[in-house]
Image 1: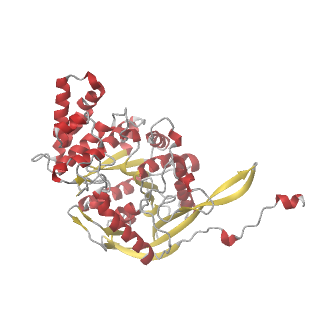
Image 2: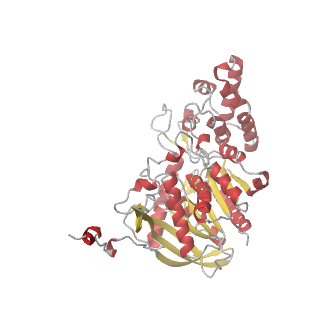
Image 3: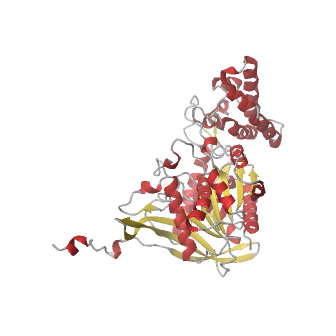
Length: 490
């Protein structure tokens, strides 16, 4: 056997290598009496990574196939036309919620509280689509939607904070390069964990590729997990959830005759001063001080003083959603606490399922699976993973011995790119990512005073997916369109 024989590797048959399977279709929509012709592209793009062995390149080897759906306005000037890259969170969620709920040119009719749509559901044009102002690229991270690691690769490499940033960032770079959009105004839109991803990406795209953004849209944001994690010794989430609890109590009739704004003002006042002080005092509270705190907290959030006393002034969120309407034998939703539902066991401490998620899972799943095949003509026999647990355990190894936060990365991106604008959307009845917690994080961003005006906020009387509520959907569509137009710098 010669040296040549031992050095050579078996030839790879090109037909065995994964390749992009994009499908393009043409469509139109009428927005404010204006007909918009657009191109839709759906399919999977292959992500490749350069592999170096003993200092020698083994080439760019396929690692994953990532599904995306892109919409581009026909005839638009790429230099002036914005493009928005959108994704949801989870981790483990596909982009279906922002795609068919708020931003895309077609949307599902899912109904709302008290009028949830029955199957088989409807899919209609969305005249409020952001496509009227920006091209759209919806990205499903690896193991969500139709996205998968390629044969022989470990999906777990993508199931973590940094691996996720790098793979989604690479999709954005590829799409931007292949479509000649480096000179276009560029935006990110993320929801829930997607806001964690978006804040991290704003910094990652700048530092890794020199790709600077015009704006980031954070919908139902979580930038610092220390504000949300109810862990032993961490009292921060309790006061930060309090105003949301009060809003939920108000919605369900526990503050009869009072306006929501009045209730929120009272809750925020208690959450900002007396409540954190009482928690910090612990056993040093006098009996009178403790009784006063119990009484006020119970009145604000609509539960009994006995319950507040039994949980030692520390009301965990799912525990609250299970407790609030216990006497009515109902639980309230976590994603959207306007929704209520039955429970199998009304003595339990934590509900067995979220009625607000149950209300939207069916409509969005049916609409997406129909839409991709029947209208976008993309065929794939894989199950489209709407929200999967297959990404668990999600790795946060970069934050070992520390809580997860991307507030520092968002602040870094703002300092490096003072033209970057940030839009933050809050739902008053969002029981997963409470508005007051997000406000707390934004108030502590380490940016100079002159950059604080780069951040704007919008509030809606709905939940995590605030666009499920029709008035909120219409208003939010206007707010995001206005943000993109003002931030495009064209």
